[in-house]
Image 1 (cartoon, helix red, strand yellow):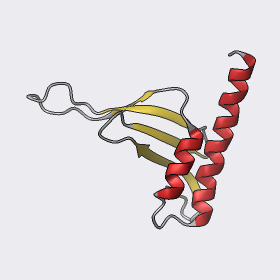
Image 2 (image 1 turned 45 degrees about the vertical axis):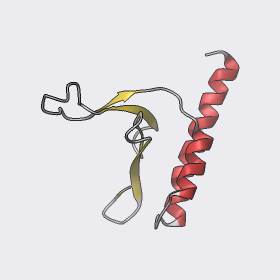
Image 3 (image 1 turned 180 degrees about the vertical axis):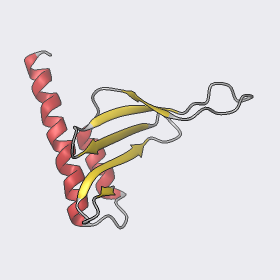
Image 4 (image 1 turned 45 degrees about the horizontal axis):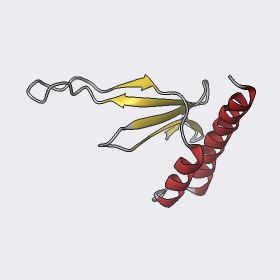
Length: 103
C-alpha cells in the first residue's frame, strides 16, 4: 500500500501464487488497475538471475482474489481492505461487461 504524506492511499500492489505462476495486481490513484504476470528473471539456474519484471496478463478471477485477501489480510486496516476490494470489484464489472458485449 502506498500512502501520501498525509496518509491517504495513492496506490497498492499485491502478488499472489508466488512460486507457481506469480501474478501482481497494481492500482494507482492516477491510473487504473492492472493485472500482470511476474517474469521472475530466472532463465537458467546456472546463470545469475535477472531482475523480475511485470508483463501484462489480462483478466483474472476477482471474486477468488477478494476471498483470498479477506482470509489473509493480517493487520491490514478495514478501510484499506475495503479500498482494495472496491477496486477489484470495479475491475471485475468492467471485465464482465466486455465479455457480455463480446469484446
